[in-house]
Image (cartoon, rainbow, N blue to C red; front, side, top):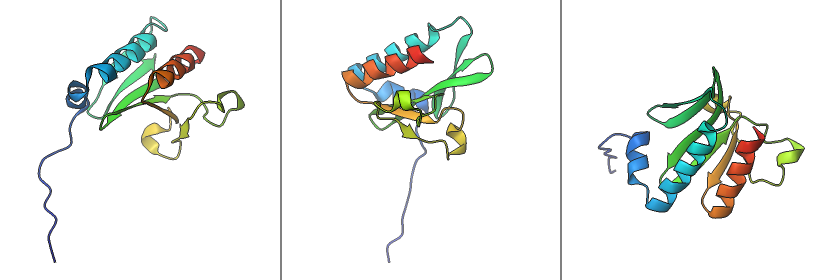
Amino acid sequence: MTSLVINGTAKSYTEKLNALDADKLAQVNIIREALLGKDKKVHERISKKCATFNLGRKAIAKISINGKCVRLHLAIDPNDEQYQTYPLKDLSDKASYSDVPAMLKISSDLALRRALKLIAAL
């Protein structure tokens, strides 16, 4: 029987952000600027796992990075009829994403355009 040896710790959000290639980093910056430009009261908070964007005290979006995939979590209902054309995943059953249950993977320019449309609809 072999034993499982795990060395190291999980990378933080800033370490994952610095490890992204130039295209993905540009996509994150475009999304970040769109969220911050939405209202003067929108503020960014960077934690170990993600960047959270709050409008006052209410979370409206989160950006997380998993490997080379950028994920945008939004405070919209993913089961709403007006969002059925978007490939949103419902994460409302997880406690950390209960405020922002709709998840969209940003992997292409089309996904970025969709993300910007969803941000404008917030």
